[in-house]
Amino acid sequence: MNCETEEIRSRLLALEDAGYRSFQCGLMPTVDPNRVIGVRMPLLRQLAGEISRSPNREQFLKDLPHRYYEEDNLHGLVICRIRDYSQTVAELERFLPQVDNWATCDLLSPAAFRQHPQPLPEQICSWLGASHPYTVRFGLGMLLKFYLDEAFEPRYLEWAARVDSREYYVQMMVAWYFATALAKVYQEALPYLEVGRLEPWVRRKAIQKALESRRIPPAHKEHLRKLREEG
Image (cartoon, rainbow, N blue to C red):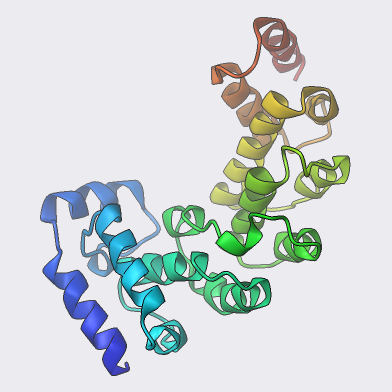
């Protein structure tokens, strides 16, 4: 562990909130409670800003794996502030295999991706084919966040539908992706809710999430209820 990481760890430990730690541990069954300090997200974001402006940023990013969950979150937040696309992808390639929970995975929203760089879709496709479940979940999250609005293409629905995993946190993200797609690109997404297009559990969960959504009109929900009854 380098001096920069040691100093950051000391600052994180000084921000420990025991009550918040207990709350977080209850939400993350895949994380060893001994890895959780209990630091609230606004404080982590503030520290990430400081690290991003520090000349020692690269030292912290190289120091993997981390001991604490909050160090992982901090690492992800620093990556998200990088503006260069190629550097962002390179750092993610090193970091994603270390991610062991949905919370760290889902906080990742890289600034370098916001303008939909030309090579990003194929990079996402590569992540969708990874063996590490949280790398796959991250890829699905990027499709959901960046490619269900003006940059949407029908092929992305097929990419998500082809994800083959029995991992709960991957299947849940596939379901969440299709529920969101029903709210944003209903006509294109609807055929994927037909029987046989998605794994049955994923299909049921996607319909459930869609029915709970306030963004889907009553007529569409009525049709989704019929689809649920069919299978």
